[in-house]
Length: 96
Image 1 (cartoon, one colour):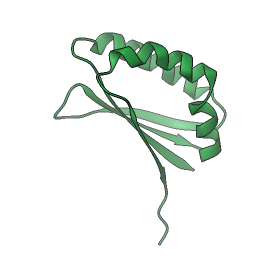
Image 2 (cartoon, rainbow, N blue to C red; image 1 turned 180 degrees about the horizontal axis):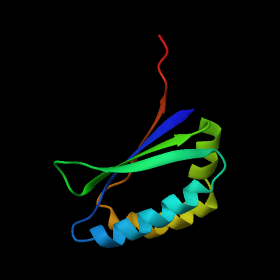
Image 3 (cartoon, one colour; image 1 turned 45 degrees about the horizontal axis):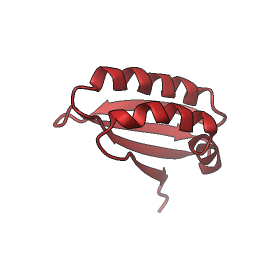
Image 4 (cartoon, rainbow, N blue to C red; image 1 turned 90 degrees about the horizontal axis):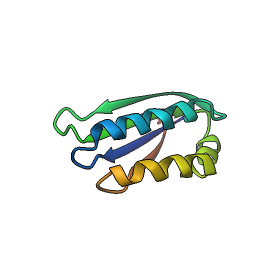
């Protein structure tokens, strides 16, 4: 299993539009092969900063979703509501 950390910054006054579109994207991701679970967190010190932590079966499953036409089309609606590019970090469990 991998975890994907997605950070986004919402442009001022677009929070409600962003929330609606982000929910739609999550609904689609849930049905993608390999998606396990996810949660979205709000930065306690910056209300325009959102962090999504998603669990995927494998990096190949995540890559398939990330590069899918479906996600690209959904993100085309979300990108104008952000004031910078999203940041994505793929995380693996550390085993010492």
